[in-house]
Image (cartoon, rainbow, N blue to C red):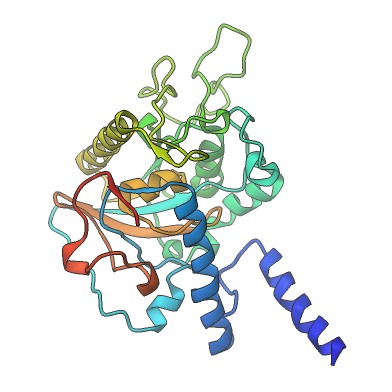
Length: 308
């Protein structure tokens, strides 16, 4: 009996070590329930402890995390988008050095070897990207997102355009969430010429300077930082909507997706969600039932509504 218990424990442990979690716990109803309830609840607790703020109604579509929800025959339906609209694939960056070490003092960390492998296979491993081609790739100008974008979409044919947008940078102010200069005369490592595939024209001097919206350790919100964050994400949404491309990949950070589109759970590295963006905002099916914090027809409208 002890041997059987050890075998089951090892099987679960091995599954959690896998980089591609698409097939995790989908072979039996019990495994599906464990993934959709225990795994998502764990992500929700981490998100709540991080002091997250909800800036928009939640949007989730076709992600790995919503597999359990789709099996439960969700009653919330996606509203038809208004023309003209954009299909936006929200892609979190691959595993970076600070994700492994937990050291937030690393300035603008790069992807690890595992992170590069994740990024290189994201179009094959993320269900919402299978068989899809994007016309435009927009990335946060931090190194981990720029690297992810190139590795994920650089070999796509026809080749998309690549633009780095400073409004898509991470929300925090730790060194790990602080970017690098495009060109540097100080001897510090700059983004050029390494990321010459990107249009970096939107990134001015010290583009990475931003006020903190909250203090994670003290669990205190800073209203000025919240206002600045809301304004830049509104600019980003308007800019995306103004682009001529219809299919866009936004390679960014969990904090951005949480505030930009109301994603209420922590995405894994290189996980992807599908959303639509039109003149009325972001739209997709309701998230998992246990994460719904308000009726679907009466989602919070205040951009800085506290997530409770």
